[in-house]
Length: 281
Image 1 (cartoon, rainbow, N blue to C red):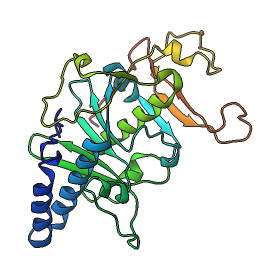
Image 2 (spheres, rainbow, N blue to C red):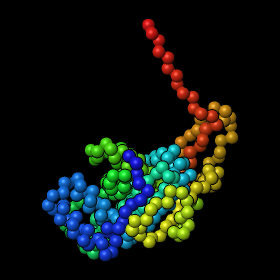
Image 3 (cartoon, helix red, strand yellow):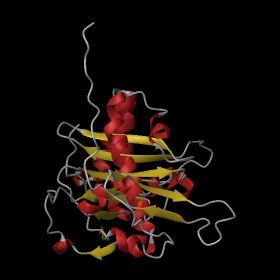
Image 4 (cartoon, rainbow, N blue to C red):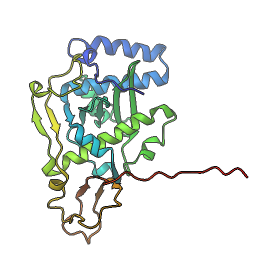
């Protein structure tokens, strides 16, 4: 699946959203399938909420490169730092798309259209990831709870084609964790400063706050975390994936309740490949 660099917000802007929502409601009630209705409603409410209350996160390519080589170790959704309930993730890497991640409750989403959510209606809290590809808009919904892992995101999905969207949701979660570390706090920038490659075309893009998540060299990240760099032999070092973890045990007096990030390390030589030989008996 090839994701688009652009998310279209034109139909959810003031002056447009009411007529669009009326047509969507009519289609849901009269002829639209349950799947299309789910995608349409989630997409509409997420985008409408975003143009009123959201922020944009711009992610430097070096950051996404490192985080793609980083694992999460038992970090829960409850521990996930959320900078805003609605965040558009724009990745400077031209190979990565743009994604809208929404953690707002149904009650919050209704405020975007001036309505109120029924107090007696029961629901499971969901996260919503909106994206676009060359053919259509897409939506990934997932339960918010428990450990953040790809298996949890896949549990209630029947569509295997969403696996790539899950990978991108996972990357967005890691960006949030990265940006929560004090020395890695995002830098606020203006639209005029968006001069890097792959800038998306503007289709009703809301005028919202923009924060840029920037790369920090490994040595600076490691400094102050109480970890000594290994200065031993590295002749056969093939690299190591990074990791993020939460310290929960009481023995971690200084780190308890905090998230630690150890960046990946590039190896000094390529990892050898196993060569198989076929023996004809």
